Image (tube, rainbow, N blue to C red):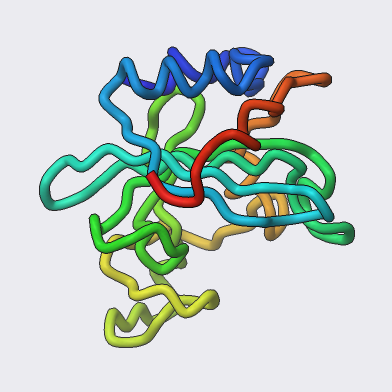
Length: 170
């Protein structure tokens, strides 16, 4: 299981404060470097590593400066690990993300009373192939409670300098 190697389950913090060490760990676990792209605040980069599992893939997203101002995790470097349909690195390819303990959290959740219709996309336009139907009435901790369970901050002062030397595509 990959998550205990990457994230401290008791704190939800990434175990690496150096990007090179994290990249080495991902490679040793069978992930390959896919690509990088500008993302988030000025100077921020999103880095993708993937591992093909046949009908699905694991996709690691690393956001070196987090999201832009005004969004959750703004200016907070963080990482997530998604289970995808093996069709690409877009959000619409994701089916679930992993928690710090490796539990899958589906991207699409709804109550039994909501009248689930698999032919319609979810609120983000994602196909609803893998959905958790919640019993009763869902009264979660707010719209970002799911995201808080599956995004992991880096320790303060993490060194991302090695990202600059990565090629655009792996």
